Image 1 (cartoon, each protein chain N blue to C red):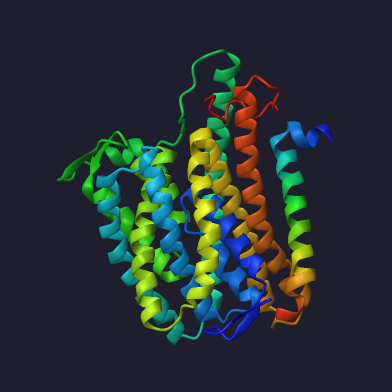
Image 2 (image 1 turned 30 degrees about the horizontal axis):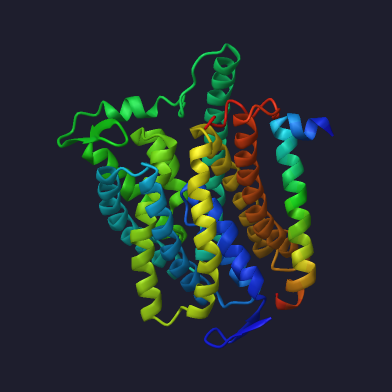
Length: 35
Length: 355
């Protein structure tokens, strides 16, 4: 867990994982029918 | 769901405001309009492609004005540099649009556009990452040794080369603190304009690195000056799209509500960080947009058979906006913590300003 905060690459990976998770949730909840 | 009468669709309202807000933060921070993120997002929300471009361009114009005013207050705009670039860019955009029309007659524009986008973004990402990584390492060492570290640090040799070109007239850009031939600025404007016109984007993600690595402006000046240009070119684009009936003003209104707050935050956030931090965010934006474009390209090349590719392209487009926004907010947070003497991750002190 420490690597995710104290390494820049780790922090990058952590934020990207959170962001893609949120984006996937938005897609599933609101957008699936629109595309 | 809100019904947009002019566009003739129903779309989730809060997603529009959120998109405006997040892209506002990113645009105000790295000096781009964000068209490469917003247009695909609006298409995903259900807007027709032509209307997505019109809404995007109109909201970029509004956001550009807000960001420009804020960056002017922060002293990040060089008017001589900006005006010279605008002239060159306008010429270039016209040629880029003609090039695009030519590729359309060959029936290849979609694939060529996406391939060109992927290649350009990849090259810019690699160069920006390598250069910024070296500058970051140098700054980290200086911080460790207790030396005074300024707001900017670049290790690129491009500016020294281009500033030595002795072509009349030579201009002094007082705010940017550079002396350079006017032709260098105009040619950079033309080349980035051709690419922007051809790719159908505002071109901020090409112009900001060009201003830093060719003209020699500092990252903060490059961001502010590029936003001035975006306000002008976005205003013209918005007018053209409005005349052609490509704009749903209600959608623009909601996006601008979010973008006004986001652009203010993004612009102010630049005063909390050093140049390399902005360049890092710019390079992250490039690689994520590149992956999104690559996925769309793969989806098209495989005859739109694999829905999973479309799904990942959408998730990357939305995820990119959220990611960049979170990174910028966390840099400001770390800067505030560092200023108050609280512990921050090891990679942070050399990237943020102690206010």
